[in-house]
Image (cartoon, rainbow, N blue to C red):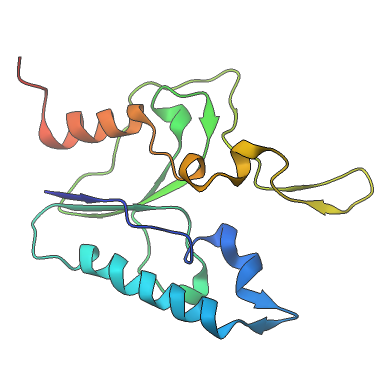
Amino acid sequence: MLIAFPPCTYMTNASAVRMRVNGEIQPERYAKAMAAKEFFMRFYNADCPRICVENPTPMKIIGLPPYTQAIQPWQHGHPYTKRTCLWLKGLPPLQPSNVITEGVTPYVNGGCKDANGNYRRFQGRKERDPKIRSKTFPGIAAAMAEQWAGPAQK
């Protein structure tokens, strides 16, 4: 089994605001996105019977294959939203393992409009830190291990 978490910096839908400047695609950023796609596709096309590739929602311009499933941390015991896509081969969809129904908030602030209608991005340190933004939640990792590999041996 292969479970891959390739870098998403240049492919994610959240980075679309940096792909175009004044309506023009930025060649350097596009080249980096295509290199990231090539790396992603190595996992997706690996010679392995069971594959999961995890990434955020990608930009359409990148041309990744359709994802199999979108999951949220709140489905696996964490009180947050942070949409995560799974590309699955030979594996069943991940089932919710510990649904949180109250107090769910965004994990990071992806941006919003202020009272004057001006777009404001990443207000706090947490929202700017790439390691924090790319977090895989332990509840999701545990659900993958338990559902796809079986219960832990004691």
